[in-house]
Image: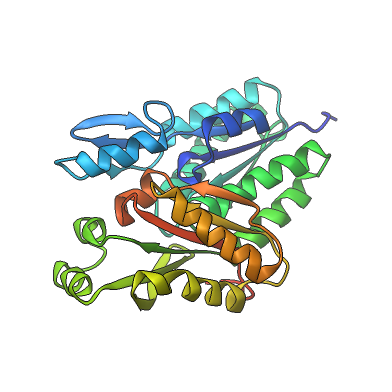
Length: 295
C-alpha cells in the first residue's frame, strides 16, 4: 500500500499570493485576464497593485475566463508524476464559474487516459462556493493542518464546513466600476452617486445581493461592524478585505478589533475577479456565518 502523500491545489481567484502559495506548498492554477486585448495571468504577469492601476486606466474593461480542462488535466498529470496519492482541488465557486465542471471533466479524462492511476492518485474536488478569501483562506489553513499531519477526510471536512458558512461582504467606494461591470444599471448607479449612497453587498454561494444602502461615508464602518456582530459565529476567525485603499481597511480592522475583542486573522488583498465587478476602491470582510448555505 502506498504511503499517503497529499497535495492541495486551488486557483488564482482565491487571491492567495504566489509567494504564500509556494511557502505553504499549494499548487496554483492561474486564470487568464484579458486587459486591453492582451491575455495575461494574474500573479504571473502582474501584481494585484499593478492591476488596480490597470483597471483605473483601462479603456476597455478587463475580463476574466475560467481554467480550461486541458490546463487542469496537465496539473493532474504533474501531481501524479510527483508521486502524490491524493490531490484536493478547491475551485472557485461552481455557481460563478465553469472551472469546477472543467475539473470534473478533466478528472474523468485523466482516469480514462491513465487507468492505472485510479488506484494511485485520488482526486478530490471541493466546490469553493464563492470568490477570493472565502475559500482562499480555508485553503491556506488546510495547508497548515496538512503540515501538522491532518488526513484527507479531516482536510475535506474542514474545507466543506468553512466554505458552506463563509460569506463575503464589501462596500465599493465608487460606483463607476459596478456600473461598467453591469452588476447594477447605469441609472441605479447614477442615482446612488447623487444621493451619496454606498451599496453594502454580500456574496454567499456565488449569489450577490445588496443588504443595505449606506448614506454617508462616516456611517459605513459602524454599519459593517453591526453586521459582523450579527452574522458571524462567535469567536470564529474573520478577515478584512482590502483593495487599493489600505488605510480605510486598517481603520475598519481597528474598529472590529475593538468591537470583538480580537484582531482579524489577516488582511487579504482582492484580486482581478472582484476588481472587475466592484473596482479596486473597495473594502470589506469575510466571516464564518452562523447559518450554513445549503443550496
